[in-house]
Length: 406
Image 1: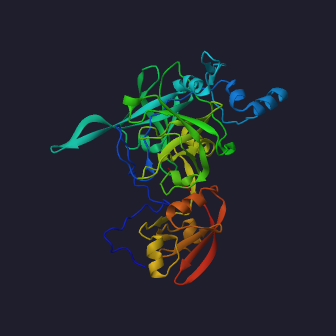
Image 2: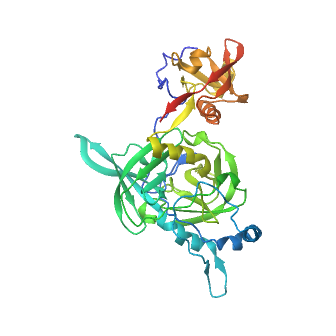
Image 3: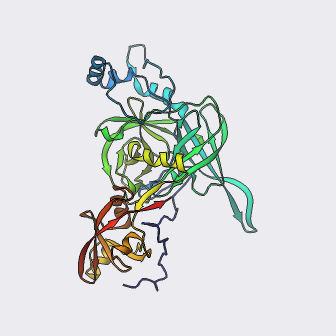
């Protein structure tokens, strides 16, 4: 099927397994957003929560930990963090408020990130920089001033300004960003910083309480605290970047201005990076976060190399090939190949432009984002089985995954 004469055809880099057009909603003020809109959120959370929070929420777990003399969470992701306050906040009647203590303890490690870009007017492009968007991040290394955030928070920035909880505003430097996972790392040069502790998102349970702190709408509503629960895990969104992960779903309020900020469990550990929400009419309390355990390898790559490498088959996809269109033509749903990189892994396996990839390792796919989601479960150099359709026939081939750089 030849799409090349269609005016709506999008030509994508042959080294991208899906197109990344960078069109992510970024706002400083509250506004209407579409389904799965990426919320640019400034969150304010950091440090470790008090260890005595656990008996209040998870008395059985703490009892086991006290008997064994060690914590049940031996996650190696824990980073440099501030000494936690070891008491929960109480009222005159002795009632405890773990969220209050989490807010106090985590707050110093969460930052706001302002994205400045040069604009234009009727007379041409202006050389003056203006703040076009704001988001959040959280400090993961206090000594080096490293901050984790979403890529869409910093995308296109000519200048980044990081606002700290103590009122300081510091120019930030982009260490690296990765559109394929919507992750980025920013660095600042400052002393007296506080870093968060990272939890193990793979152990999250549905119904577990969580806290989100951020700047919905920017600095005007900075340090807003919302609470909720883990509504579900392993959620998939047809959203570039987030589609690479099995996402955490939460009913903790996530609004424009919260993206890049942390989702925190009641142990005071960061378990997710707030990234998106469903703001379609009629839907409430459907926010999504990238699991921190899944995000951490990419964050480490960005810190070490300034870019992230991912597995790919070096093809381009035509996004106009939808399930509906395929059904009308009597073709299977899948990812329509518009171009194949000569000498790349897909080319070597016999895949050509015009083929439709329908499965990856036996898992059916209906779009390029679903294909990427499946490919990212493997590593560079691994061999996967690709099923593709061509002129009425279906064939399985083995493809060795190549490296894609952000």
